[in-house]
Image 1 (cartoon, helix red, strand yellow):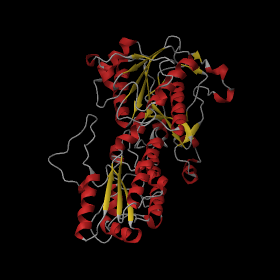
Image 2: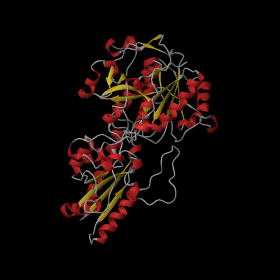
Image 3: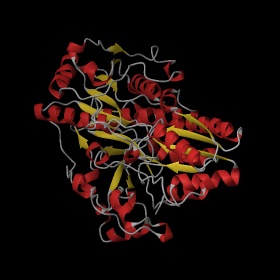
Image 4: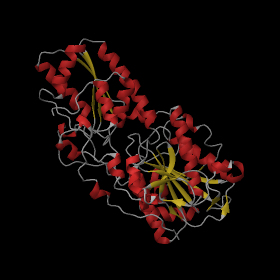
Length: 486
């Protein structure tokens, strides 16, 4: 039977609609904008209590860890006594708990434990990759297999094919046996050797499959939708009183999982986007009044667009889903672009795929993909056509090149920095799993790897704080206004 140690206070749907507190300085957007964007990280942190950060466990840890003798004593945490990392590290916030520091919300520090829940010689583990492709998926699969095998002596590891589909027998996807030899070179490739898919499956059938195969731990690699699917799986496991752990490794190039500094693959993705922006800049400079228009991924969050623009230093305008895009008017995008062309004779625009959706014409009700995400209209094509029409009406001859590298940037192999990050996430996921933790993600917070409860990670969606330092740095780099036509 699962021992429940966390509080499932899932009030995020209500709290997420709260208006934000006053933004600092003169960069505070108008009230209408602040009403429409998400709460900032500090504002959300203030709505989390200590019990929300407690981790579910399967039971007492009765087996000595094989790592305890190999590693230094300082590297191994005693079960139940691991140090914690504060959710909000601001001193002003900490003083609120000076009377009782145990009330301060803090994540459990990740790492190996001196005793473990599972007998490694008898344990069988499963790995599944879900959702869209992302750089580093193969690195994580490889890391899980190597740490399980070399670190703990787990010999039985299977990989489910094509996401959660692979756990449903009638799809006919046979699991792969994963060994150190079979995964030795996969990190050099993009994508995932296991394959992936979108969409939910019946949790009862998935648990039946886990029981049939004798799986004790399932590692789930995916984004927020995948984590929600994993939570339904955990609920069914708990209902049956089974001792099966479910551990998540957060994957999304959009970097939109909250209470995690960054998800793996994000650094690689925005680095790949930088190369495309450089090409757009060359194209723009190669013609009088040249315009380079680049669309990046980012359905609800503009992190890739922001970081790629900052890293390239060649971008004049960044459009993100967190702020409305106004085209008309003296401070609308079109007039600002005109003035930029008069000044520099070229310009580069980076737009996140979820930005400016209200500018797109729709035919009928919005449709969704298999994961339940609304299918977006192509804002890049809309901007291309509207910019061209506007400049023609003004007698301004331009040469516009539209580049859409969306699927390119998510299918490349992981960068060196992401490769290291993937390895550390994988090994810490194995440490957590063997210690009997469940319904949690491995994340990094304030530079330390920590255990993040799935209910907390999926409570909010992380978005760019338009009153925060990242957006401020974009404004300072591009010279664009805080908001268009405002």
